Length: 168
Length: 406
Image (cartoon, rainbow over all chains, first blue to last red; front, side, top):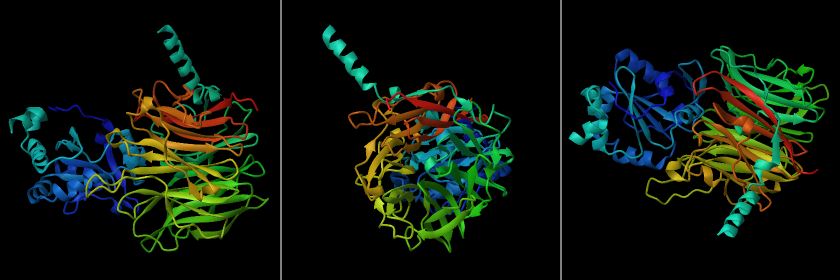
C-alpha cells in the first residue's frame, strides 16, 4: 500500500547509469555511501533494500546547509548508510543514464522530466522499489530520521506519511 | 469605464504585436517519421545548434538509438522540398552523442559530434558526407560549432591528466570538402581540477566568443571569453550571469546551466541560459547581449514573460542573423504538458510576450527546440515531439515565414 501525492514514473524505471568522466565531481554529502543511480537501483533490487534518491545541484545553498547541519549527524549517517541504498543525481550534469524504456539521456534531462523544480529533493523508495514520497527543500535531522523510520518500520504499509509524522 | 476598457484592449493589442505576429509558421514537416518502438531522439548538443540553413537548403542533425546504440544522423532538404530525405548516418563508433551543425560557404554544412570520448567534425553537402576528422587529443565531449564567412571554429571540453580545459579549433575547409585542423587553443592555459561543461561558441567579424558552465567557485557559474581571431589569446574569463550570494554562509549564488550563443548584426552576440535566481520556481530563461564580438556584455535580462513567471523553463536555444535580428526559443509545461515558446525583442527593445507557435504546442510533449534565423528573417524551428514523457519520439520542422516587409 502506498500513500503519496508524488509520482513521476520515470524515477521508478531507471535501470542503468553510464558513468561519465565528471560524475565524481558531483556533490553528495561526505560520509555517506551515495552511488550512481544505476548502481543504487541494481543494489537496492538485489538486496531488497529501500532506496533514497537525492536530487542535488553542485553548489546548491540548501544542499550545502543540509550537508553541514543535517547529514553531519552521526545517527543519521548510521541509519542511512546501513539500512538504505543511496543514490545521487546531479540535476545540472551531462552524466548519461539509461532509463527502463531503453532511452539514454542525461541526469539533467532526467531531472527535468521528473519535474524536479528545486534542490535538494529527496525521493524515497520502498524495498520493492516503489516510489513512496517526495520531500523538497531543507529537512531537519528529526525529519530525516522519521522518514527513515516510516519505511524501515513498515509504517508505509499501513498509513500515510502525514499521519505517521503527526503521531510522533 | 467603457473608454478605459477600450484603452486596455488597445494596449494589449499593441503589446501582442510581437513574437506572435513576427512569423507565420508553415505546417510542420516530419524529419524522422512516425515514432517507432523504443527509438528516442535527442537534441542536447552544446549550444543547441541542431539546425542550419544555407542559401537554398536546411540541414538537421540529431542523436537517436535506432541501431540500439546512440548514434548521430543528419538530413538535408531544399527549402522548396516538402519532405526530408532518408537520414544519413554520421557516426560509426560504439556510441555517439550531442552533435551540432552550422552552414558554411559553398552551400555546405559543417557538423560536429562526440564519438567514443573523442570529438569529430564532418562536412555535409547535397552529395553527402565527407570523411570525419578527429579534433580532440584527449578525452573530450560537449562539442559545438560556429562559422562566419570562411572562418569556422569548433569548441569542446577536454580532460587531460585530470585537468579540464575548453578547447577551440580553427578549421579550414578546402574546396574538396576536406577539413584541415588549424590552430587548437585552450581558452585558459592552465587546466582546472573542476569540470567545465557545455561550452557554446559564436563567431562574427569582431572575433570568437565562447561561454561555458564553470565549477571552480564550488558552484556553477557561466563564464565567457573572447578572442579577436584564431591564434590570438582569449581574454580573462568574465562572469556572464549575475549572481547573488548573501542569504547565508552557504550561499554561493543561484544555479545556472546550458548557455546558448548566437551572433547577430556584424559584431554582436546573444547569450541565453537557464537561471534559478527566482528561487523555488525553478529555472527561468535569462539572456545578455554582447557587443564587440562578446568582449563586453550588457546586464542580464529576463526573457520569459509574466504569464510563465511561476513556472520553470528549459532548453533555451538562440538564433540571430547579420540583418541584426535575434530570437530565443525554449520549452516549458505551463499548460500541463510541454510546449515550445519563443520570444524576440519588440519595438521597445524589450523581450516580447511569450509565444507558443501552434505547430509546436498543444497536446503531447513538444520540447528541446533548436532554431536558426535566415537572412530574410524567416525562423526555422526544429523540435522533439512525443505523445507522453516516456514514449518514443519524432522530430518536426517548421518554417516560420517573416511577416516583416523586406
